Length: 179
Ligand code: SF4
Ligand code: SF4
Image (tube, rainbow, N blue to C red; front, side, top):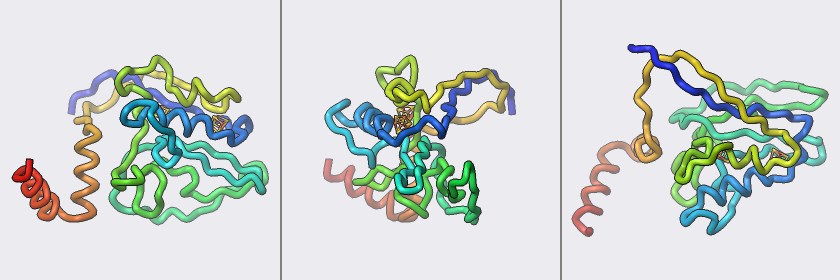
């Protein structure tokens, strides 16, 4: 497969600076609402906060790839005296939990770095984090050329994983007859 230069965007997270304010969840869900900014619901956010004030644990994680099957990772990590589970750091939309799933449809959510229309110069969660706990980074990497799946394809893939191809195609056929 051909190698291509690609701009890789990422968000570095400084756990010491996050105070659990949830501004990142609010702006992300509002920006991706339909129509834009018509609602804010953290369950629809592509960045979620693992939040436990009693243990002083505030861990923002932004959504990565959809995965059809849960993994075997059940390790525990202790960082600065605070215990985290392996799942806490995971960015996948995965069957083992509710995070990073659109609450009404159950379809997977993935961070798009706010490149949705209109594309933002800087991710909005980074802009809205007044504590600088989220740090935007860009670098150039040489990677294998990949076929990028759009949101709709990822959504269809998750429906097929859940209900099977036959049921999904039957439903689409039924719907197209009605319209
Ligand atoms: S906006 Fe910043 S400080 Fe507030 S919860 Fe998100 S990452 Fe933490
Ligand atoms: S970069 Fe944009 S899409 Fe990604 S988590 Fe932050 S606000 Fe949401």
